[in-house]
Length: 161
Image 1 (cartoon, rainbow, N blue to C red):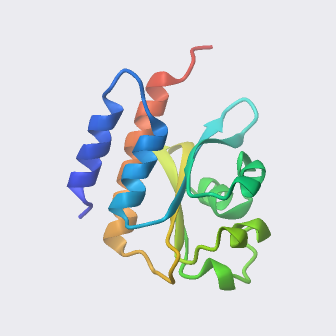
Image 2 (tube, rainbow, N blue to C red):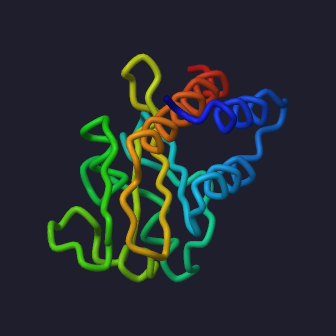
């Protein structure tokens, strides 16, 4: 069962007129005892993930994280698969999932999850710790629930075309 306290807290933050995505990301990172995080939303015109908020990412890496193609890096693969992608130690990754620049974040235990609403992709959220770590099933479920809340709110604020 997911952490209903965190999900409720995020839903409360999403209920305001002016959404502070960085504050929301900060709450999520804190709840998972992580040091870094990113929140990307899908630009449906370009089909690229665009950075909306970040915490703890070194400034020199931001240009590489601003726009992410679907299928590239942890966020892009989570978006492509529509399921979480996790690494217990990103520093030792040899799978090719993590982009080479990701190692420069100096994090180890990391997870990227899609923001899904009715199985439709709206973005991704990634969080990481500076220690080797495997996220529990409950933590993964909670992150997915938070992702669904973020996706539902993002739908509400999408510009009409």
